[in-house]
Length: 285
Image (cartoon, rainbow, N blue to C red):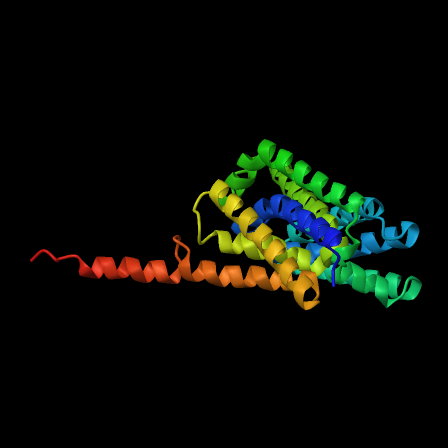
């Protein structure tokens, strides 16, 4: 069973991930790039694996390796997509699967399968003070970047041709977004693993669309849903001695289902209620 101090640390890390990852997830959903986060989480494992072999599981050492891999993966995928021989999602698939295979070879050959399992699934009890500082720093950097560039991100999400006149600006914004996603993924690697960190980023962002229309409203809803998923999941995992990252992601899935049913923006129940009110209105003869 997880110790109380470890539980508090993991909860703080989950909240920090919610603050940084929630708004990014909303942008990825709006740009129809929901699977890009998953692809990037696999793609940056090669850089994280190389850093792991050099410096061990230190989160500060994993960060530069993962960010370097994110830069390579995003740039290579963009170059392949710009060649117009492959769509961007196919380009991402080629690059991230290759990087994932490299990470598996590096870690299983040099460090054993336990190291790979740690990066993929994490260990919530291993989130120490340095990991919390990294999670908090990632959230701070993300919020600052969004405050500076949110208008460009949102405009391009609504109108992909918005920055056509300045393709370098569009490429720069896209690369910045991918680097911010990578930074938050690295922050969650050690505690929740690459796979579950993406779930805590994307599922609450998708659920937020049932609660608000504007980007700001969806970002706030995504933060709240992700933080709630983390805290509730950690408590359940600690009580039942289950894998925390998986339980947290399942809690996010349950909150998504609740949002899809009862959310005021297109939820099934609210839509039925609205139809009932329209049907009850007297018709003019």
